[in-house]
Image (cartoon, rainbow, N blue to C red; front, side):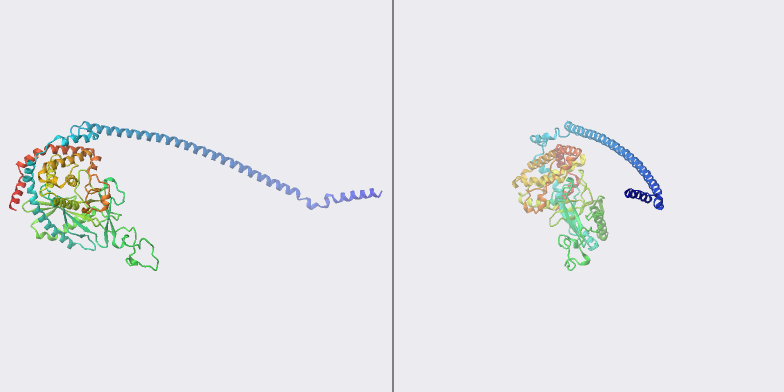
Length: 552
């Protein structure tokens, strides 16, 4: 009974405790919180759906762009393949046309009766018939021709040299008085070169060629750079060089203060603090090329022409003749005009000394038909004229008395000059003839140049020229020639250099080569008649020269 009463009481108490009216405020907010949560969840779900839609659209756009890029790449690849195929076809067609053109020119060369009569590969076979079988006059006729036609011009050359040298010496002295050492070039004494000073001049009128060396104004000095001194230079620029103008206080060869960084407490005894070395600084010299430290030959020629004009105006009152420039493109080419109407041309060429040698950089030479003009104003031709004069003078002392080497050179140069007037200039000049003679002088014994061997040596000289023309190869006598005696005193860099082919323009210019060969064989064909005619009929200017020589 008590147990049942306990159970009833426990049920009543439990019912009272769990009745909802006991805690009305705690349970009234539950439904409101659930609705807010549900609302927030719905809003978040909508945002997720919108973001999902945006991502799907972005993926679709990226896929479309990727497909478009792949399509463009495929089209570009196809265009490149088509372009490469077209370029290949164009290249093959160009090569085919060039081959056909070369074959056609070779075919014309082979079929030409006025040219060589055979292909270049067959040219050595002509050694069995030198000079195409043409004969030259005998020794008696050659001696008679040289005595009556050329000897008079050689005799008159001495007085011409004496007159020109005296006048040029006075002209250069006036030029030195006008020049300021601080702003102008310093002019040195002239040097006589070429045929008038080597005793083989034949052309009329007689013409002296004088080198006038000059040095840089202070504080600059010239630093020559040869083509064979390690600097890269095209093949057609071999034999040329450049002249760098540097300040004497910036010479990097003599002081190490420009190569090393000195401390603040160290001072160079050669260069003060205000006159420090600046490597790579270009010289602000008016004769340099624009934006370049190298000397410009065009600027030098303009300066030289102006200086000569001023010097002549200072001394013109002392002379009874006029002085004018002979050629506009050669500022040093002058001409004396006498009141009688006669004139006397001569060349005064500005040059620059190349280190401690007898080599000189020539600012300008007369233009040759083979195209030997410099490619730019900073290219200077290296002249061996002084070495050539010394070599001929030395050989003349070793050869027998009355040797015929200069006579051979005079006769060949005379024939070449007359032929040039008939058919025009060609790729063969008097310098090539002199180079061939120098090679023969070095290869022959001294006894082979006796006066009695004139006809033999002349025939050999012409055969040497013919062989050189057919092979298109005539090496410079000094450059790369190890056979030159050490007593000549050539710089070692010149002896170690690659041989220089003077006939290289004939390889590159086929028309010039054909004209040169045709002109050479025409010279040989006309030589007997020309020598015979000039031996019997002497021009009036040569006759007057003979009378003057007789008086002397």
